[in-house]
Each structure stands twice: as structure tokens, then as C-alpha cells.
Length: 297
Length: 125
Image (tube, rainbow over all chains, first blue to last red; front, side, top):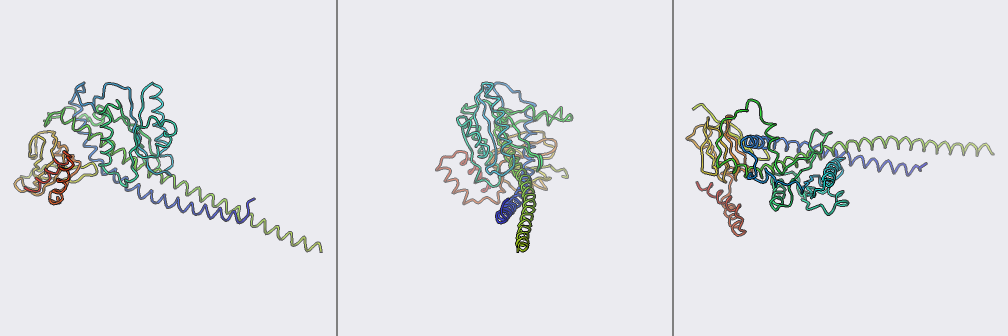
């Protein structure tokens, strides 16, 4: 059995760990609220954008002469996986879950004989791939300096993706991030960003009453608007993913730290009981020694 | 005229302004156009320039907001402008715009030059 001194040290150390996890939980809770507000504030734009895309999608036929961001390259050989994770750890299963989903997708693609390229946003999901698939990693976008995700950051990432696409580096791009359901539930999600998934958006937004929309005048014309809209839409999707990711990260961290605090509390209770028992045993032993010593006289 | 137009200006980060106005003049890619209540549905790209808002009367200019490109959509619900960046014209600092423009010209950054020139033009008139 451990000595009294050792037990006491152990209790003090667990107590200070508990203080840290408790503080981290509270910080995460505050940050979560802010992240949720940011996600809420960004909703109108992406909703309008989706509506515009949907109404354009209803009129424009996807053909070989459509913008390539929409029509794709016509091939399905090289896949780019954009994996967004956090820059900091201690967020429960947040990063692991994203990395696991991305790994599954990657392995499925590799098994089909496709070429896979990996682009990381945030370093935490990168580490496991660094060990196993270093040669597939084509880039890493640092997010460490960013406190609150701004649209400019998302645009930077979207531009990096588009320029690679235009250079013909890949045919299909997927974005991996964690969708925020609640502080307890975050869902790792894969979203196809190139070629843009127009018909899906149209299906979601088309209400029966809008089945016959009034003739809309386009200025300049549908194609030109679409060509301008697609890169923006990509940026908006990346932006939304980053916002969802930020909220998910904080939610996940909050839950993880709450659990850690509770576990530390349990551990302190257990250790205190052991400490008291040991102390009592030592006293009893001393008493026995004194009494048996007195009887021997 | 009691009829008013629902006008919304949205940036990716938040809803910048939303309300009932009499008329809005939008700097469309193929020329400025004014949107009054009951305008036919249309969709247009926007060039960098100032949106003029006539809040109560289509003869009285109430505010001007500079946007650097984006989209305008008119439907039966009203006018929606999607802009990445929007600044009220009164908040533009002409001196800073001039220095930025000089820097952009030096760096030969065409997108920035176009944007800053439009910004400068917006402050002049």
C-alpha cells in the first residue's frame, strides 16, 4: 500500500488537474456560445445563396460548356480530400472522428484505384496521416493565428482549392468537417464541393408553390452569373464548414472537459478513502505495538 | 406612395441591414438600375460601387453603402443583395483610399485597383 505522503501528493495533483479541466470547460462553454452566434449570423447569406443557386440550377442545363466548377472535368480519377480539423487538442473525439471518416473515404478511394490528394486545414487531423500517408499530403493551411473565423479566411481556402482545380490537379473534391448538432453530438460529415452539387440544393429548396416561378431576367446572362456565383458558393460552403467546425470543436471540448472534471472528482473521493484507511491502519498498528510492548513488561 | 420595398443587404458574416425602403439604386454589372416596389424578378451581378438607398421617398437619398461586388436578386418578396464586403460611404476615409490605391498600383494588383477606384468615385459624388 502506498505511503501516506504519496497518497497526499496524489490527491493534490488530481485536484489541480481538476481545476484545469474545470476552467477549460468553462472557457469552452463561453467560446461555444460565441461560435454558435457566429454560425447563426452567417445563416441568412448561405440561405440566400442556396436559394439563388437553386433557382439558377432550375434554369441552367449542365452541359459540357457549363463552368467547370459545376460540370467537373468529366473524369473521376484524382480526388482531393480537404480535411478541416482544429488547431488544438483536448477536444474529446472531435479530431479523431473527422480523421477516421476521412481515412475511411481515402481507403475506399485507394482501393478503387483512384489517386487521392490530401489538403489539411488545421493541424490536428494531419498528424495521423503524416505517419501513414505522408506522400499524399499536398498542403496544409495554418489556422493557428485565427481566433474567430472570418469570411476572408474561408475565401483564402476556397481560392487555394479553386486554383488547384483550375491547374488540373484533381477532378473531384470533398470537404470533411464536423457538423454541429448539439454540444453533445457532432457529426463528422463529407461534403462534395467540386463539382458543385446543384440539383440537391434545388430539391431541398423547391417548394410545390414555387414550381412555376415567374420569368426571371438575368443580367448579364445565366451562364455569366453562374460563373461568378460558383466560386462564391464554394467560399460560402467552406465558411459554413469552418463555422460548424469551430462550434463542434468547442462543444466537443466542453463535453470532454466536463467528463474529465467528473472523473477527477471520483478519483479524489477514492483516493481520500484510501488515504483515511491507511491513516487509521497506521494508528491501529502503533497502538498494538504500544499495548503489546506494555504487556511484555 | 405607401408601397414599400423589402430590402436586405447580407454579408457572409451577418445580415447587415434589412427593412422597408422606397427605392434602391444598384450598381449592376451592366449599368445602374433602380429597384422600386413591384419590380419584375431579376438577377444581376454587381460591380464595385455604391448602393443608394431612398428610405421613405424615391426623391430623397437617405444613405449610400459601398459594396465591392456581389449579387442582387429581385423577386416577389423584395430585393436581396449578397455582398462580401459593405461599408457605408460616409465611413470611407478618402485619404486612406488614396494611399491604398497608390500601393495597389505599385503592386499592380488589378482587382484592388478596380475596387479602390470605385471606392474613390463613390466618395466624390
